Length: 270
Image 1 (cartoon, rainbow, N blue to C red):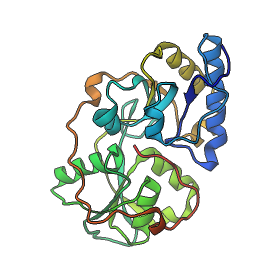
Image 2 (image 1 turned 30 degrees about the vertical axis):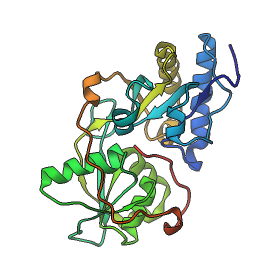
Image 3 (image 1 turned 90 degrees about the horizontal axis):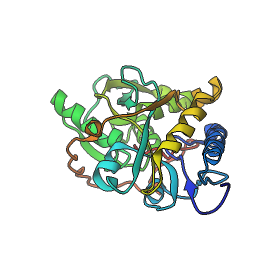
């Protein structure tokens, strides 16, 4: 069973120009492992679909989803393979957290909050929970479309705070110099991190085996470029269960034209 157009694979969440080749090498190893197990796999990753489009495809052999979209819209519509373990400091395997960022020169940031999108676990749900625990109001003023754009909005003074997925934050700090204008104000509680999924009807067992072997074979350089991807974790279903957050009360939503560009953007929306 080899290449073909009968299935697709997409790993968009942490994909950037700087680590696209590392993603391609990871997929090549997964692909070959799947084919060796008799599972059809496409030659290359699909980079033309949005994450949500990929999750809805019945021919998705491997994709990535984050906690909140799975809870809100895709429970039962995708099959969980395993959670990715990015060895996030202070988190158990398979978990991650958000960093709450403010401007480095702002000693007392206000409440203007930039979020990537309302269905973001790390950009909206987890920061909200942190704010409630701290007794600190968050006033959403921008829905930016990506974690990178949210961080940039804070750096440029269009918002005071943003919640950024810790893995994305590590990649931004590695490749984007303007992040020196930001500081980490706080950390949220851990939450299940990015999760590998497939469409219903696909057996997750060979996918997990091929993924585990491929991740184990990553070079140190590729592992770092992929956000310190270390392995997989099998989380109980209860780990994903928490109430859905209320939608943000946004006075205005930023369009892409409103957001300046400072280089390549990750599609991460966890």
